[in-house]
Every structure is written in C-alpha cells, then in structure tokens.
Image (cartoon, rainbow, N blue to C red; front, side, top):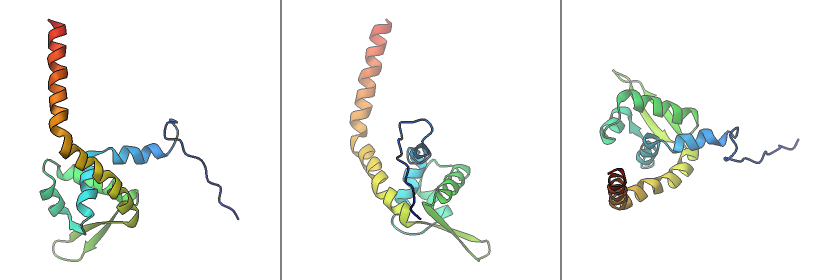
Length: 128
C-alpha cells in the first residue's frame, strides 16, 4: 500500500502546518528547546534558567511541546517526584532551526531598539 502525501501550504488557512508555526513562534518554546538541546533538564532548573516564565506558563509550554513530539518527560521516583525533560530527535531538528532566532535577536536587538525609537519619534512629529 502506498502512502499518499498531501502537499502542505502554510499560507492556506486550513493547513495544519500553522499549528507547528504557532508553536515555534512562541518565545517560551524557542527558549525551552534551546536549553534542552544541551541535555536533559529538570523542571525547576528550566524555571530558574528562563527568567520571567511563570510556573504555569512553563508547565503549559512543556505539555504542548511534549504533545507535539518535540520534548519527552521522565518522572523519577523520588520524594517528592522529580521530573526531567529532554529533547526528542524530532525536537532536535527544530531546535537547530529556531535557535538561530534567539541568536539573531541577541545579535540585532540594539538595531531593533534604535529603529523603534526612530519610528516612535517620527510618529510624535506627525502627531504634533
């Protein structure tokens, strides 16, 4: 039996690839995948390393990444239970791609902030 492959078009509103694009466009997902690329990490360690992420948001993002097959969860029977997350082979293929976004942001943030400042100054002049 031959598998039928459907051509995907992310520009089409009904295309399921938009779900993946939504995930990779999320800053928390990008940062989590970047951390996990270096090896397994425990929940609280992730929370400490990613400043500004709430426990709830971290939990939700990890569950979504796990559901998408990008992250795996391992419960270690300790008291209390320790939970460790690691990147899957599929997640590794994505991590290699999206980490470039983080690097780009860190490299170009000064130029972006300068452009925003110039833009905002122009809006103030036209409003006056």
